[in-house]
Figure: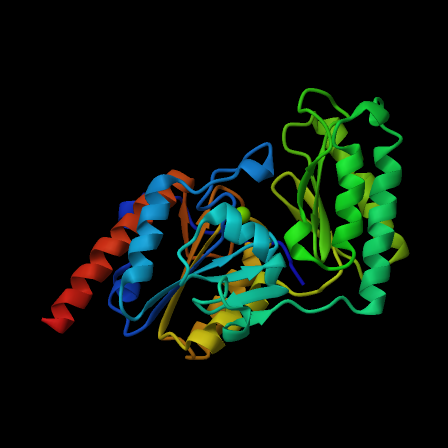
Length: 326
Ligand SMILES: [Mg+2]
């Protein structure tokens, strides 16, 4: 269960100040990263998110290093995350807030060879997802100009595909242009629907959030996830903390780092702290991006700062590995 941190957390640091030595010199390093707001700047249209080029280069470099693995941990479904991130093939992916995983470098080419976990919807979960869909759809059609909105038909098609659990046909459905209070995006994912309100007037965003969450009153098992300009209604209970624990079990690293920017990343920070405190890891480094309260140990400003931090890690880890081999 995601809970907002009760402490404000650390003061901001410059990327050059973050203590990377224990990660750079680890026997075996697994660096896990959130995508939106960390590697990719947040966008009004979530289908246009792309990694900052310097971060993409740094991740590609890290993924090439021995005893070093990169993982992305996102609320996006795996198929969308793989497509938008253009992550190296060897990168492991955790999607749908921990409900989905793709562990294995050959996953994209040969599904049988990889460890892929993308569970079916249980009947009760499918019923909840259908209720969410109907609830959001009813609201969409009450909006001014609903019939003329170009995305309406596509959204309905996407919904049918999504309820069968097929990730490949999902994605953000554009339910309108971005210049009116009634416009919003509903992202259809295998286990959830995400209402994006970025760019809306605050009152319109609040009304939309309030409407969206009403369905959870009827179905208390629906997980309401609130993030940066999103309200997500999910039918699986997995969190990014579950994703971190899975990565630790599968990769057996001696050190892990995690960088995240949103409330849901607090579960990942907490899981990493637990793994470190229980000595399953010798080092766990947690870095928050942005100004919100956090339980992470470090705080940096934005995706540009992340790119700088990753560049440092590439340089320090490369140097360390050269030293121990030489
Ligand atoms: Mg994020």
